[in-house]
Image (tube, rainbow, N blue to C red; front, side, top):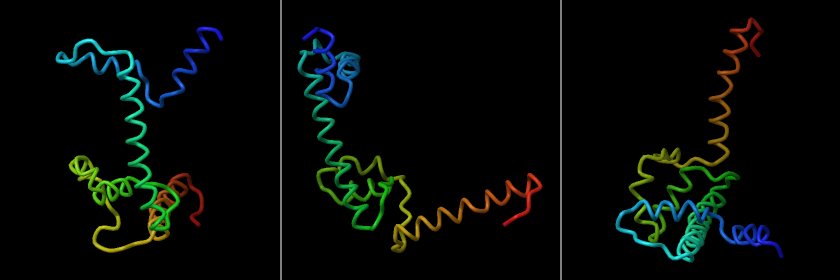
Length: 132
């Protein structure tokens, strides 16, 4: 096996860029030399953490009948999972369309479609085309 292919295989073991993680760590003056394995371990930890967060958001999305994970699904996952309590401040400003009343994913999709339709009609009217 050539050296180039070893490097590619090694990079495929992690989802997050090891070199960038190492650079970020070295920017901190309190961090001394970084062992070669450390950024790899951090990359794997990030991957597992993201799987947990996204898995929780996907479950909430499925429970609500959605087909696409939205920002508010992440917000609900973070708010409903004790392990993610440290992220609550970050998602505080995320708009939750279900706040104040329960709406289904279908109702949300219809509302989004309705928001888009007037824009198209205005654009056609501006071009001199007949409105539908």
